Length: 86
Image 1 (spheres, rainbow, N blue to C red):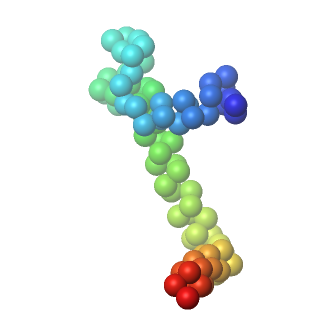
Image 2: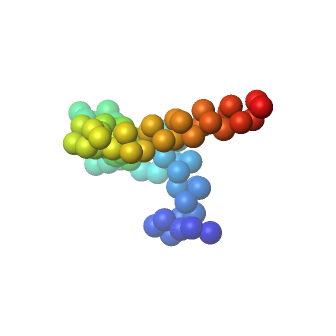
């Protein structure tokens, strides 16, 4: 079992998708963005945004990596499909 911060990794990932906060929800010290959003939900939103932005940024910095990774994967899947049909 892989643990991340003493929590099983599968449980940690499923908690990222749940937006219901069941602790300290009414405490105003844990609110941000004009006291409308819980800090945990804001952190989850920023994490998901970061997971989207970083690959785009890496593609911008190193545009040639798509030729080394993407095209062989594409051709490999095409070759497998043609071999399966024969």
